[in-house]
Image 1 (spheres, rainbow, N blue to C red):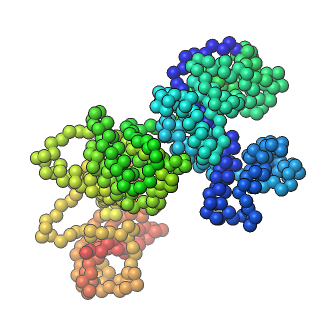
Image 2 (tube, rainbow, N blue to C red; image 1 turned 45 degrees about the horizontal axis):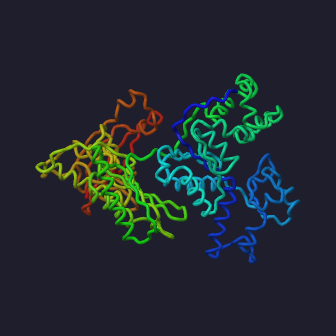
Image 3 (cartoon, one colour; image 1 turned 135 degrees about the vertical axis):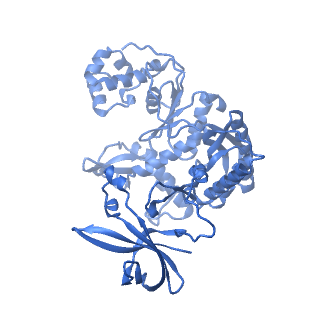
Length: 545
């Protein structure tokens, strides 16, 4: 295969953590050791002696426990991935064995990806133990690609991770280099020359393909590239041919970032980590002013804001707040985050301090200019929206709701509760049935979520119960208003809605009643056809104030 590299403007950094499971366990044990809670390792547990001896992670493969990860000491005595646990114990009888936990490994990889956001917002997972970072156009912010790569690897090493990294023009080329060599940076257009002498396992193809290449005498990527494309495709398939072209830099493939980059972002780096609440609050306030200026230039306002706090030990904490209307004032941003910080169930723990604080607007809207000085209604709506945003930041957006009228005769479905932040304009312009101030309410202000059945003790002739029992209490009726007949929604049956709820929703006769104690109820009689017999049942819909 002729190696003709195309010009690549993209720069991809590949991170490979070959010992992620053992590094994760080691970090956990060190934390437990510092806290004095090293349960399960015996009373004679010594951190130095334990970390220096061989230990492995076992996973069940093909109905047998095999080594899925190991530390450097285990590799030094000749153990390999895929060796049965019985063989490992035969080589080292006192070897320590831990159970594999793929969910914990994935969570640890996600945390590392969060930490990598300090370098670029375009981070993608490369399972099981890798990451892709699109560093196009941002390496100069860290002194160049070489300094950026060294800083990233040194920081991860201080956090307790073994890491390999490489930079190339395509994700596949960077991945192959990261798995075979350490710290390689490939200039643009030289991908084919960089991977020529790498072993074929660096391609990342399936084990069957790798074994087939070796049996065919193709030991390096250069050997594979020297064959005709037709020959490679006929033997190993088109997918492998496409992979080879990507590794050689002849074609490219996109990465899938974990989250889209924010529309606007401002951040502040600290030469010395900060940990005091006053400094953190002042930093967020200053970043809010810069963010508002950046959005104002393009006529935008923030609907979702995220504050990210990067600790020196690699832990990243992100706090998000939402707004019902585009936010264009730094004071309101500061106020929303203060409300959010005050009610955090898990307080913001600075640990050894934050060395980076970032404020971003992940969702924005265009700001529509309105006359607000003379329009009292607009000012009132703005105050209501600001109050809803503050309550949502403190209590949660799903707990602040507004009700929207629905086109239905069924009382319990006449109003639909929706998020106040998302539907406040509709709620303010909604048209509800009106009544005169001198008229009594026809509906109770509060109705039950589901109508509750009552036990009828005595009936009025052709009317509501004269005496009934509800919630273990008896009520004797002295006044009655009604009936008010509400028919079933015939159009649901016309469009084919045949659920049990609609089948049982027959004609209702509503009554407003008052008992001897002065309590007023709203109940109805509903007719149900059961086996060609018309039956009635009485249900209580609500209670008047």
